[in-house]
Length: 529
Image 1 (cartoon, rainbow, N blue to C red):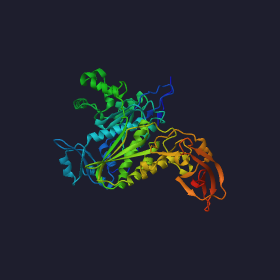
Image 2 (image 1 turned 60 degrees about the vertical axis):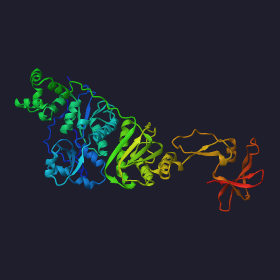
Image 3 (image 1 turned 120 degrees about the vertical axis):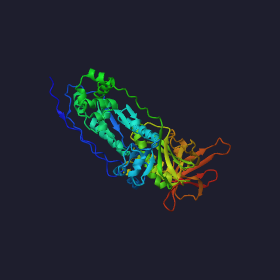
Image 4 (image 1 turned 45 degrees about the vertical axis):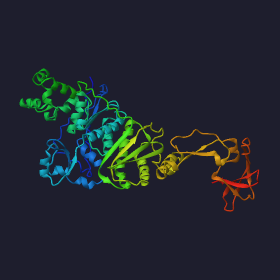
């Protein structure tokens, strides 16, 4: 006979929204849901493998609007998101509008009667669906089984198999909360042994975690029937016979409940208590990165694009981390009323961090002049890559402690962003010993050429930072001979016969010289140092 289960410490509820999120309506005062002590299973008990996390986004329309709004003062005034129809209704209201008496679901005419010239924004279901699918891709970092429910602004994540990887269910929930908060979303999260239980706990904002069936039953017992997804006729019939809580249903005879209210009620109870499996299709992310943002106000200067662009880059980073992918280049499309401006940016090696892409884009935008005001942004990358083996940080730490090989790709990316792609090229060995012809250039910095060993002639004459072409020079006083070069003797008199030397000029600079054996003239090929 095993020892009785010991009560576990209740999970800490999530912190309330901060002051700057005044766009969100204040949470209504609800009576606290009674939470029985959580039971920790005995060592011999089998912990269920499947566990679900329901992420509910009740303020998705307002939060999506806040992500595209650079002016926080605008969000302090009454604002309504309106659903069009025969009778326009309020889909969402910010805190200032709710304080004045506006509520979601209210007819727009009634809301205007209690508000003094509120700002009206049209409800866009397609845009919200896109936002929810983006967040589903972000949550893939916690599980491979993610199921969005766009109609109710909710995402379900199966976390039973990844709980140990993230330090347990409570730590996993906190990481999911922090990830979404970093993108500007503030969800309600519930954890349950079934999708139905997780949905219900998220709706009730109950942070308790039930690890075994008996604890789950005790946790759901005090839930009011009004919180259950029941048909109105079923709910009224249950109330007519004096039933008020879910525990009242669990004490009744199952055949009698099925006879009076149909098998749907028993099916709901079985799904809540994890007695019946609920099959949910998996979310499949798109194979490309394609993020867009519609601006609520026109932007006339490239410097003002930093705020919405930072939002998009953070969104891209979170989505790439969920997909375990990276990218080396992306395209930014600026939408105007009559045209579009398309900009591209490439890096020396793959990366996903927003704080590394943003300075490059700001440098790139400094060279642009907007033909018209910008009303939207679209960030695209058609080629996603594996993440770098050594991480995606190039200059995240102290540059003095960063190896030069790791600094070079970031430096090249900044130069290309500031000067343009054709202005920064890569030198390649052309396998000819003449220094003025041995180094060719190529524009494709993304492709590293195969290493080529120097020719014997190149090893003989050495190397330096040479000029574009040899310049005539005066004979040196004390040359240090390096070697002789004879090249092109087969090319009908186009051969080069030179003796290379090193010397110092009057300013103390080290010169790289050669003497033509045909004419005796000295030439300066370049400099050392």
